[in-house]
Length: 114
Length: 110
Image (tube, rainbow over all chains, first blue to last red; front, side):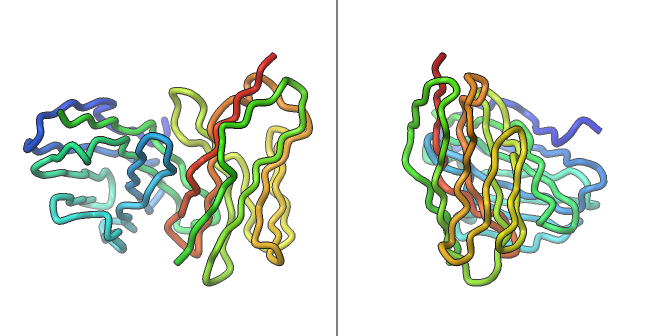
């Protein structure tokens, strides 16, 4: 297993466009998390899945954001009608079904909205 | 709500100096505590963890002890190297998902 993979690594989009990011977790991990990180800040939680069920969403996650994890494997995060404030690094992480194990993070997708 | 407060950076040290990065937390229950490290151009990596009071996590010469009485989880290393230059994040889980501090940037100069 090659760890958590995220695609693309970088995305530049025009304001108002929709973007979609993909995350492939470690195959035996049934929990998957999305975080957002801006410059000089720690990662901020967005949402997480246990298998295919979305168990929690942060109030940071506006109506323009949606995440899915069909079949409990890979996950997608879509941002509709992007705004300049959406520019950030979007991080995906996975873990087994016990948080004490710690998370394995991907390298992230850097989004720039121009 | 749950939160983590880390000392402000950046921290600049000479090689072989002693390192302490302070971390305190607020939690409603009995959290697990973690330190993550982010090297330049790389993703977050788990450095060490402690799951209950008085536990000591250790890895790569770094240590942190879970102090419930002071709600702290300070990161220490006896002798830093240039390769330790990175951003360090303290985090808690009570029980999930992880809540991170803002990070402390460490620069070690030869």
